[in-house]
Image (cartoon, rainbow, N blue to C red):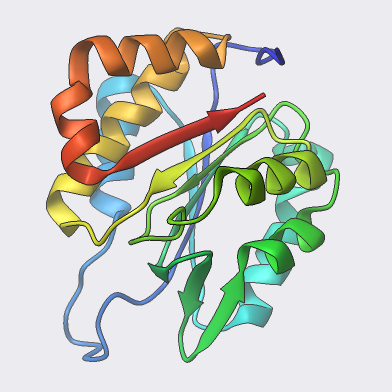
Length: 189
């Protein structure tokens, strides 16, 4: 069982465009600001319109100066084993190769529809390749508001424990109904 190095885990959020109409302003940015103001969880929030943007920001996240930003929150549209970035798709396996071995002591959360709708074995391979503490996200299409509220709760719970197993127990004890509704899964070794 791998345990987080610190209780404090800041958030490194990469977000895609939710709407084709650029006048619409849907974003997880307000949720991140809520966490900063009320829970003292610092964050970096960048928008990615292309796969190249995402790869660039992930390469920045790997730098030592961002080591305290140990939660990677990927807020995109999704489908099974995939996140959607603009008109492009990025498969879990491709993302694992991009992050290859660079996620020691880090958490990866997919705030996207259906990305973790896959066999647990594939997610375990993702964990092994990236060396992340855990991978979490949803197996079904989710409501933006409900999932954003759950994401905030999840980020706060990650602050309470070093042991991912304890986060899992707390969520199941106190928020099982919400987890089931969102078809949330938390995978760790």
